[in-house]
Image (spheres, helix red, strand yellow):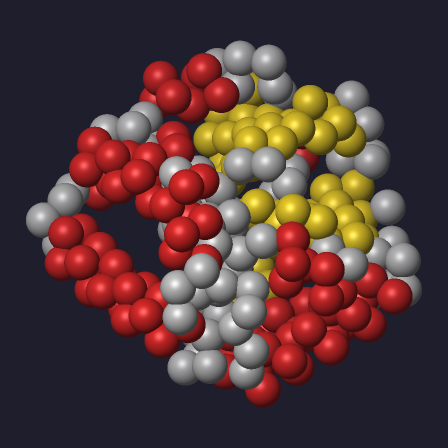
Length: 239
Protein backbone atom coordinates (compact mmCIF):
# COMPACT_ATOMS: atom_id res chain seq x y z
CA UNK A 1 0.00 0.00 0.00
CA UNK A 2 1.19 3.50 -0.86
CA UNK A 3 0.51 6.51 1.38
CA UNK A 4 0.75 9.76 -0.54
CA UNK A 5 0.73 13.16 1.20
CA UNK A 6 0.30 16.50 -0.58
CA UNK A 7 -0.82 20.00 0.36
CA UNK A 8 -1.06 23.59 -0.83
CA UNK A 9 -1.96 22.90 -4.45
CA UNK A 10 -4.04 26.11 -4.63
CA UNK A 11 -5.89 24.84 -7.69
CA UNK A 12 -7.90 27.36 -9.68
CA UNK A 13 -8.95 27.99 -13.29
CA UNK A 14 -6.27 30.70 -13.43
CA UNK A 15 -3.44 28.13 -13.19
CA UNK A 16 -4.25 25.24 -15.53
CA UNK A 17 -0.72 23.85 -15.28
CA UNK A 18 -1.26 23.08 -11.59
CA UNK A 19 -4.53 21.33 -12.44
CA UNK A 20 -2.76 19.24 -15.09
CA UNK A 21 -0.06 18.38 -12.58
CA UNK A 22 -2.63 17.13 -10.09
CA UNK A 23 -4.46 15.06 -12.69
CA UNK A 24 -1.14 13.55 -13.76
CA UNK A 25 -0.41 12.65 -10.13
CA UNK A 26 -3.73 10.79 -9.89
CA UNK A 27 -2.93 8.93 -13.08
CA UNK A 28 0.57 8.01 -11.88
CA UNK A 29 -0.60 6.54 -8.54
CA UNK A 30 -3.98 5.10 -9.57
CA UNK A 31 -2.70 1.51 -9.83
CA UNK A 32 -0.68 1.47 -6.61
CA UNK A 33 -3.41 0.89 -3.99
CA UNK A 34 -2.94 4.50 -2.90
CA UNK A 35 -4.18 6.27 0.20
CA UNK A 36 -4.06 9.93 -0.85
CA UNK A 37 -4.02 12.53 1.93
CA UNK A 38 -4.57 16.16 0.90
CA UNK A 39 -3.62 18.33 3.88
CA UNK A 40 -5.41 21.55 3.09
CA UNK A 41 -5.36 24.39 0.56
CA UNK A 42 -6.30 21.98 -2.20
CA UNK A 43 -8.03 24.90 -3.87
CA UNK A 44 -6.95 28.51 -3.91
CA UNK A 45 -10.39 29.49 -2.64
CA UNK A 46 -13.51 27.46 -1.93
CA UNK A 47 -16.80 29.31 -1.72
CA UNK A 48 -19.03 26.33 -1.06
CA UNK A 49 -19.87 22.77 -2.08
CA UNK A 50 -22.63 24.12 -4.33
CA UNK A 51 -20.02 25.73 -6.61
CA UNK A 52 -19.82 24.23 -10.10
CA UNK A 53 -17.58 24.92 -13.10
CA UNK A 54 -16.29 23.02 -16.12
CA UNK A 55 -12.68 23.01 -14.86
CA UNK A 56 -13.84 21.52 -11.58
CA UNK A 57 -15.98 18.90 -13.34
CA UNK A 58 -12.85 17.60 -15.07
CA UNK A 59 -11.11 17.20 -11.72
CA UNK A 60 -14.10 15.38 -10.23
CA UNK A 61 -14.19 12.93 -13.16
CA UNK A 62 -10.53 12.04 -12.59
CA UNK A 63 -11.14 11.68 -8.86
CA UNK A 64 -14.02 9.29 -9.55
CA UNK A 65 -11.80 7.19 -11.79
CA UNK A 66 -9.10 7.16 -9.09
CA UNK A 67 -11.38 5.93 -6.30
CA UNK A 68 -13.17 3.47 -8.62
CA UNK A 69 -9.89 1.52 -8.76
CA UNK A 70 -9.93 1.01 -4.98
CA UNK A 71 -7.82 4.00 -3.99
CA UNK A 72 -8.92 6.33 -1.18
CA UNK A 73 -8.85 10.12 -0.83
CA UNK A 74 -8.74 11.88 2.52
CA UNK A 75 -8.98 15.64 2.87
CA UNK A 76 -8.25 18.11 5.68
CA UNK A 77 -9.37 21.70 5.27
CA UNK A 78 -6.82 24.50 5.01
CA UNK A 79 -7.00 28.25 5.46
CA UNK A 80 -8.07 28.71 1.80
CA UNK A 81 -10.68 25.94 1.55
CA UNK A 82 -12.07 25.63 5.08
CA UNK A 83 -15.61 25.73 3.63
CA UNK A 84 -15.08 22.52 1.66
CA UNK A 85 -17.22 19.76 3.13
CA UNK A 86 -18.31 16.19 2.76
CA UNK A 87 -20.97 17.14 0.20
CA UNK A 88 -18.27 17.87 -2.39
CA UNK A 89 -16.22 14.84 -1.39
CA UNK A 90 -19.27 12.62 -1.88
CA UNK A 91 -19.03 13.30 -5.61
CA UNK A 92 -16.06 10.93 -5.81
CA UNK A 93 -16.30 8.93 -2.58
CA UNK A 94 -13.75 11.06 -0.71
CA UNK A 95 -13.46 11.39 3.06
CA UNK A 96 -13.35 14.54 5.18
CA UNK A 97 -11.06 14.02 8.17
CA UNK A 98 -10.59 16.17 11.31
CA UNK A 99 -8.31 19.20 11.44
CA UNK A 100 -5.87 17.01 13.36
CA UNK A 101 -5.78 13.32 12.56
CA UNK A 102 -3.57 10.38 13.47
CA UNK A 103 -2.29 7.44 11.43
CA UNK A 104 -0.27 4.38 12.23
CA UNK A 105 1.88 3.11 9.39
CA UNK A 106 3.99 0.12 10.36
CA UNK A 107 5.40 1.17 13.76
CA UNK A 108 5.12 4.91 13.10
CA UNK A 109 2.62 7.05 15.02
CA UNK A 110 1.89 9.92 12.65
CA UNK A 111 0.04 13.20 13.24
CA UNK A 112 -1.23 15.11 10.21
CA UNK A 113 -2.68 18.62 9.94
CA UNK A 114 -2.69 21.59 7.59
CA UNK A 115 -0.22 23.51 9.76
CA UNK A 116 -1.80 26.93 10.23
CA UNK A 117 -2.80 26.16 13.83
CA UNK A 118 0.90 25.67 14.64
CA UNK A 119 1.70 29.29 13.68
CA UNK A 120 0.73 30.62 17.09
CA UNK A 121 3.04 33.66 16.89
CA UNK A 122 0.77 35.11 14.20
CA UNK A 123 -1.78 36.35 16.72
CA UNK A 124 -3.91 38.32 14.26
CA UNK A 125 -4.28 35.31 11.96
CA UNK A 126 -5.15 32.99 14.83
CA UNK A 127 -7.84 35.44 15.95
CA UNK A 128 -9.28 35.56 12.41
CA UNK A 129 -9.10 31.76 12.13
CA UNK A 130 -11.07 31.31 15.33
CA UNK A 131 -13.82 33.63 14.11
CA UNK A 132 -14.16 32.41 10.53
CA UNK A 133 -14.05 28.75 11.54
CA UNK A 134 -16.83 29.20 14.08
CA UNK A 135 -19.54 26.66 13.07
CA UNK A 136 -22.34 29.23 13.39
CA UNK A 137 -20.57 31.80 11.19
CA UNK A 138 -19.53 29.16 8.68
CA UNK A 139 -23.04 27.79 8.55
CA UNK A 140 -24.46 31.26 7.94
CA UNK A 141 -21.97 31.97 5.14
CA UNK A 142 -22.83 28.71 3.38
CA UNK A 143 -26.45 29.90 3.13
CA UNK A 144 -25.57 33.19 1.43
CA UNK A 145 -25.58 33.56 -2.40
CA UNK A 146 -22.56 32.29 -4.30
CA UNK A 147 -21.89 35.77 -5.68
CA UNK A 148 -21.62 37.18 -2.16
CA UNK A 149 -19.28 34.39 -1.07
CA UNK A 150 -17.09 35.00 -4.13
CA UNK A 151 -16.73 38.69 -3.27
CA UNK A 152 -16.01 37.78 0.35
CA UNK A 153 -13.30 35.29 -0.65
CA UNK A 154 -11.67 37.87 -2.94
CA UNK A 155 -11.72 40.37 -0.09
CA UNK A 156 -10.13 37.90 2.32
CA UNK A 157 -7.30 37.16 -0.13
CA UNK A 158 -6.56 40.85 -0.71
CA UNK A 159 -6.58 41.56 3.01
CA UNK A 160 -4.32 38.58 3.68
CA UNK A 161 -1.77 39.68 1.05
CA UNK A 162 -1.73 43.21 2.42
CA UNK A 163 -1.34 42.01 6.00
CA UNK A 164 1.42 39.51 5.22
CA UNK A 165 3.57 42.21 3.61
CA UNK A 166 4.24 43.59 7.07
CA UNK A 167 4.84 40.26 8.83
CA UNK A 168 8.18 38.54 9.18
CA UNK A 169 8.65 34.96 7.99
CA UNK A 170 9.38 34.01 11.59
CA UNK A 171 5.95 35.18 12.76
CA UNK A 172 4.19 33.32 9.95
CA UNK A 173 6.17 30.11 10.54
CA UNK A 174 5.36 27.44 13.11
CA UNK A 175 6.03 27.99 16.78
CA UNK A 176 8.60 25.57 18.18
CA UNK A 177 6.68 24.91 21.40
CA UNK A 178 3.51 24.25 19.40
CA UNK A 179 5.46 21.72 17.33
CA UNK A 180 6.87 19.99 20.40
CA UNK A 181 3.39 19.77 21.91
CA UNK A 182 1.99 18.35 18.66
CA UNK A 183 4.71 15.67 18.66
CA UNK A 184 4.17 14.70 22.31
CA UNK A 185 2.33 11.48 21.41
CA UNK A 186 3.60 11.00 17.85
CA UNK A 187 6.81 9.99 16.11
CA UNK A 188 6.18 12.08 13.02
CA UNK A 189 4.28 15.29 12.25
CA UNK A 190 3.32 15.99 8.64
CA UNK A 191 1.89 19.37 7.61
CA UNK A 192 1.89 22.03 4.94
CA UNK A 193 0.80 25.70 4.99
CA UNK A 194 4.18 27.41 5.45
CA UNK A 195 5.42 26.71 1.89
CA UNK A 196 8.85 25.79 3.28
CA UNK A 197 9.32 22.11 2.42
CA UNK A 198 11.85 20.40 4.65
CA UNK A 199 12.42 17.59 7.13
CA UNK A 200 13.21 18.71 10.68
CA UNK A 201 14.61 16.62 13.52
CA UNK A 202 12.81 17.63 16.72
CA UNK A 203 14.61 15.97 19.63
CA UNK A 204 14.73 12.64 17.85
CA UNK A 205 11.27 12.93 16.33
CA UNK A 206 10.52 14.33 12.89
CA UNK A 207 8.48 17.14 11.34
CA UNK A 208 7.96 16.98 7.59
CA UNK A 209 6.74 20.12 5.83
CA UNK A 210 5.12 19.46 2.46
CA UNK A 211 5.77 21.87 -0.40
CA UNK A 212 3.35 24.20 -2.13
CA UNK A 213 2.65 23.56 -5.80
CA UNK A 214 4.49 25.98 -8.03
CA UNK A 215 4.52 26.39 -11.78
CA UNK A 216 6.83 23.43 -12.46
CA UNK A 217 7.03 21.12 -9.44
CA UNK A 218 5.91 20.31 -5.91
CA UNK A 219 7.48 18.51 -2.95
CA UNK A 220 5.38 15.48 -1.98
CA UNK A 221 5.78 12.65 0.51
CA UNK A 222 5.35 8.96 -0.28
CA UNK A 223 5.40 6.36 2.51
CA UNK A 224 5.01 2.61 2.32
CA UNK A 225 4.74 0.19 5.20
CA UNK A 226 8.44 -0.72 4.95
CA UNK A 227 9.92 2.80 5.09
CA UNK A 228 11.86 3.62 8.32
CA UNK A 229 11.25 7.15 9.58
CA UNK A 230 14.92 8.14 9.24
CA UNK A 231 14.82 7.22 5.54
CA UNK A 232 11.80 9.34 4.64
CA UNK A 233 12.46 11.91 1.94
CA UNK A 234 10.43 14.52 0.14
CA UNK A 235 10.09 13.82 -3.56
CA UNK A 236 9.91 16.34 -6.36
CA UNK A 237 6.78 15.95 -8.50
CA UNK A 238 7.30 17.57 -11.90
CA UNK A 239 4.49 18.58 -14.24
